[in-house]
Length: 460
Image (cartoon, rainbow, N blue to C red; front, side, top):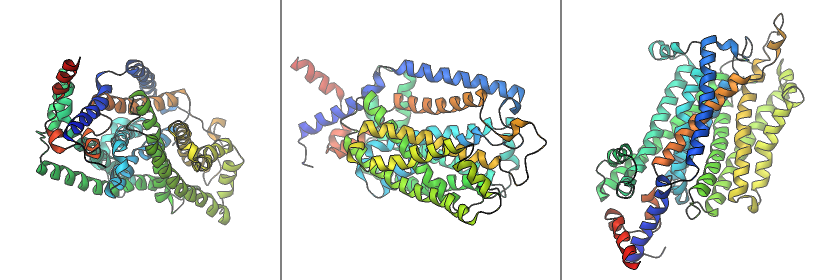
């Protein structure tokens, strides 16, 4: 990149700051979107209060399918949250530059879904007041205690990885965002941490981010591996597998990458960021998407080929229910629309554009939720002993309105967190993008928007 002159450097920086802070100051469609999320959230709260008052018996859960939609949603949320590690940490540590405009988006998604994941477990408890016992009396022999530990640890590190890259942007926001409420200005002042952008501060910041980026990798791998152990440590048909750890992690990368591609398209269109989220970024993300989907395809084949070959007692009933039986429509939709077809389509360059990748991402995310449902429910309905002398409804399971409303509440809460973060802070790192564009450090430290307002008035 050719070195910018001082005048070009200042004007480039001002344009970046203006473009990336404009959605914070004014964004059309924000209030209707928030109202919709709050409406869905309100319906879900009503459903949960009803469930809390009357017990889990108001759901479709029963003695056999005691794990249903709630556990599937928990796995889905944990899976989506892993994208922060893949984009910000793995790609960031190996020096991939094109992820700079995407890294903060991925961290927002990771943080939003990780924060809500723990709540979903509470929704599945008939006595949520006993959740405190996990902290007071939890035993290290329990995989649930491991799960709680890694989820909390991952959420804290994700929060730090979101906040630290925000610090250099705070001086820009303090100077530019002057018409917002006082509480917002207070947040900018607090998160600035007296940042002046000298060499020592830059060195400390980069070192801190690097340490956290390294630390979050084993934690992120643990969070979904431990979740898989909640299933794989039992001898149940469909869960008795040694590949569940890497299988869950690879599926999480697919789910999270799809979520980021959807968010990229929405921010690009609604925040008018086409200059920063270009076709090049969608092309690169699509290639990453195909890579992780090929890995996930391998584990999907392994998941069914090995038990199908050995065909131990009970496996035949489970596989028949998936391939040709009661769950076959969901199973083949997940495999075709959520895995095989996206791989084939994204091999063509024309499909690696913003619009097509967003549509493909939606199908993959929906399939990801259904896949977690298929991992959880069919196995519960195929116990080693026959289901007998119970009501007919115990022979099957499908979520009812209460469960769907709580699912909606969970999704709306995660999206509400992401929306608020996008409305209060820039969705892209101003400081990093300015450096990538060749803006001088001195111009970044001495940026003054009034200088451009004055020049504009003079020219006018």
